[in-house]
Image (cartoon, one colour):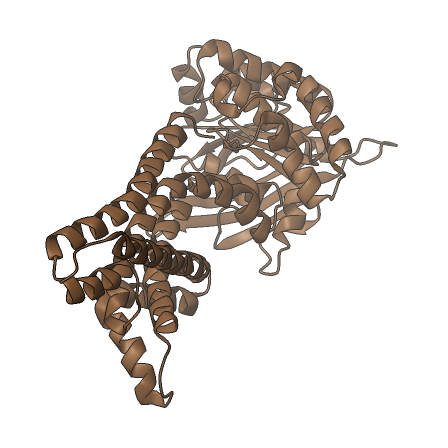
Length: 261
Length: 217
């Protein structure tokens, strides 16, 4: 059935420093009542890796991603993220969330705050950064997503793509060790999708550890160092991007075939 | 028999000030209690939540008149000899407003999309920070218009304070009428006073609603 997770990046070559695993799911089970959503999900993501979770709707991709940030409870299995045991009852959620950034499909910017205030909120509240420093930081991350000139605007004045880039900047400002992207381009038209993907690609190039749930197969192929294909609540097949061209399972072959390469 | 004179008008004007004062007490007191009840109503603690819900249901399901009687006469029965009218009226109206304001505000807080909570939570904000920096500022915008609208209800309902002997606008009208018996003139003037207080408030409320609807800010 499911192929085991590809551990290649975490296995050190001779004389090499081992790359630490930042995120590890083992045998995670979750159900909504009678509906089994996750049926023993296991995978690892090492530092600097870009993992793309793909699969049909209802395969449990988003749920698995949300479990990593403790946004969903799960009944069985363990999840370790940057030293935080997410399955632990005594998990310090705030500590976990200082290390993990997440970007949502619907951006979820704070509508009553300007772009800059959106970004400054967490660094000032959570890290007690002085206002002036937080502002500099906000300008920095806005420059990274190419929106320096929008600092004073309110979210509603921006396009969807711009809002999503602000959401990425807001998350970046907390300097997370891992960033999660939950179908961040699904609500955008192709042009806006492009500008968001470009930002994500540059993050990947800068070595950010990223896990993304996506339907953008082209992007996954190009940027991901690991593909995790989920089917029926399990990791059906995983490996480097080349598995998209040479799928070993019938299901992945069919899934890839459905998309217009 | 004397007829309606400027002295009477002045008497009504002073009573109108008492109406305003009582409204202020009810609004500030009811606001403070109501806000606490609204927070209890949505708290993570089940007992707090249920207690707040029961409080709201009882207040909303009881006529203000009965509430005022309960406080005015009820407190006397418990042992206190007499309750000053202003205290009974103030407490009664505070309790009454708190029950309604709590429910208005709870609705506004819960109308902020849950994704806003989630986004704030994922940025490692504490529950208190999420509430004060993200949720309440958005809820406040939604709450302003209905809150000012409810203020109009409080103004009008202060007239019931007359039953515990508090001399506000309605009671003042009654007193004058007892002496000169010109009910039509007197109560038209009384109604005019109420209208003069309430109309600007409802106009303001409508204005706020329009303004806050245009932009989400």
